[in-house]
Structure formats: C-alpha cells, structure tokens
Length: 164
Image 1 (cartoon, helix red, strand yellow):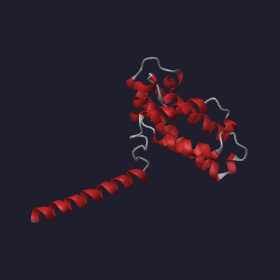
Image 2 (cartoon, rainbow, N blue to C red):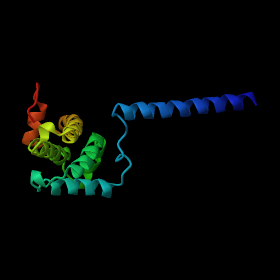
Image 3 (tube, one colour):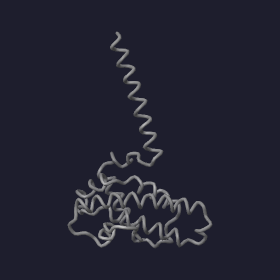
Image 4 (cartoon, helix red, strand yellow):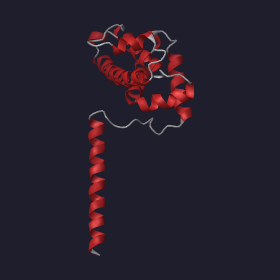
C-alpha cells in the first residue's frame, strides 16, 4: 500500500512538472510546433499556400492574413522543413516561408501610417520573430544540405548583421 502512494505522489509530481515546463516553454516562445504532429498532406498544403502567396503584391496582404501567417511561421522548425523535403523533393524547403515572411514585413513597413500604428508595429514584431525563427532553421538546413544553395542561403551564412 505504501508503494502505491509513492507512485501516486510521483505521478502527480511528474504531471505538475510537465505542465510547468509546457507553460514556461509557451511563455518564452519555445513551445512545440502545432505542426509537429500534422499529417504530410497538411504540411504540403501550407507549403503550396506559401508558394502561391509569394505571387501576390504586398498591398494585397491584409493585416489579419499576416497575423495568421506570422503565428504559423513562428512555429515552423527544421523538423517540419525536413519532413517537407521528402514530400516536395527539394532540400531548401525553408526558402518560400522565409521569403513570404520578408515580403509581409516589407508590405507592412510600406503601409501608410505604419510608424504611428501600434497594431501594425506589433504585427511587424511578430513577423520579425518569425523571420528570426525561420533564419535559425534555415541556417541549420543549409549546413546540413549545402548542395544547390540558393543565393539567399549564401547571405544567411555570412557573419555579422544581416540586411535581409
């Protein structure tokens, strides 16, 4: 009977620790991607949507659309990008996501009233966080798969502050 109570206490402690870790990861922006368990066809759909969105002009991006994509882009990691490699048969699957993020950031900066609009500035900060996340994943992917590097990849590998 005493062993059963020890096990219950340990289970309760582990459950509490798991909840605390999950909370801390989420607060610090390090939570696991919602895409981690996504089926391949869902990942492929996101990839196709990104490629299609790259064809739009910057002014065609509504802030609400950028918000949704910014949150999604913050969650993409090299794990999802590696899964996409097999699906689309291309090593640098990070590239369209990164380009879309930059395009949305540029579109925001060019909006009339951007400098005074707190909502747009917060959205820009979200996209900048997504860009940094994608850049970190891209650098890992580039180092792991250096064949056929796109030009933007060569810039990402340079030391020092980046203009992209």
